Structures are given as structure tokens and as C-alpha cells.
Picture (tube, rainbow, N blue to C red):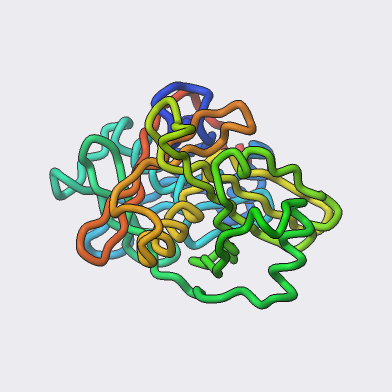
Length: 282
């Protein structure tokens, strides 16, 4: 089976978020997919299959090292890129329709690929005790926090707006205190301290599952929900670019645009490695 390692949310190789893609994976069992995903040890590994739903161009199954996801942002853009690069021909010229666990997802083809942000499963205020715990775990001062809200479109994110991009980059989490939390922090760049590429905000994503703590390099789902929250309340404009991954020596760029009530989350994708993967049963 054909195999691709794709860098997502970056136009420059090895500076975005890596995704492993296995093509023509219809012959693999769920156990095979889980085994390969654990072996690649990336945040996500996707498997491209023939579509089963009318209107879909292809079907994708998205696996982490711990199990399958119904949807995720950077695997959607990376999978669409890999499918097109491998010769996939969508029914529509300006879009690809992906079948995945949440149903059909439209991926626009413009200057770059972009998916429509899924609806929030939970929004609104964060309870005072949870917010206090998050502030302690992030080791930020209460005066650094401008606003907070649930930004849960599946993974369970809580979003914190900090006073500046510099405050975001200065976050040094208390790892043992982070157990069970999934937190995204965002802060604006200003005319006094602008981003060199014109990005409007800096974003970081932290999560812990048991003893495993991680910072995600570039996060499609989080940027989608942050945009819905902060565009919705007038904090951010209807279109902007977010920087993410700076603290990890990456250069992720997430392009946000709105069309009516729909927030589109876009990013570049480039293939870094091409090869073949052997069927585990062989």
C-alpha cells in the first residue's frame, strides 16, 4: 500500500504537524489500523478507503495511538491533500467530499484546502473552580486571562484568551497539575508588537491523558472552535491567520475565513516522505 507522510498547516516541510496516510487501505482490519497507528506513534494516522456514502469522493478512518476519532482537522486537510496527490479525482472541481465518522465533510479547494468548522458541542462560560484549576496548571497570573469559554467541538477543549501573544508564548505549564485537561490558549499580536508574517494571534494547545502530557504543534479542531468563539463575540475579525507551534520550533499557519455563518479552517499541506507500507498480515 502506498504511504505518505504529510506536513499540515505549513507550506515549508517539517515545520507543521505531521500526518501518516495509508492509501488503498480497504483490506486492513481495525486491528491492523490500530497496530499501524501505534507504530507510527504520531498524533494521527489516517487510512484512505473507497467511499460507502453517496456523494463522497473517498472515505477516511482517523486513528490515534489510543483509538479511532470520528473527525479531526489536520488529518482532514492532510488526507485530502494525499488523496488528490495520488491521483484522486473529485466529482466537483472546487471541493473534495470526505466521508468519515461524523458523516460527509466538504473540503474546499482554493488557494489552499479548507474545511468547514463543525458545530460546537459545548460553549459558554467555564465554571469558576475549573477555570481556577486551569489558571494554576498553566501557571499564568489571573491578570493575564482576558476571557474563557468552552470550545468543545469533540475533543473537549476549553479556550483561554490571554492578554497578548507574548503571554501565550511565555506559558510554562505545571505538567502534573494538567491531568485530564484539554486547554487552548490564544493571545493577540498588536501594532506595537506585530507578528513578522502578519499573523493576528498566537495559539497553543495543551492536553493530558493520564500521565501523558502533550503540546500539539498545530491544531485544526482548536483553531476552528476558537474562531467560532472569538469571531462570534467580536474579538477577532472575520478573516485572519493564526500562528501555532512557535514554542515547539514549528511554523504552523491556520487560515480562518467566514462565509455567512460558516467558519472555514484552511492550511497548506506538503508531502515530506513517500513510500510503501506492508500489510501487517503479509
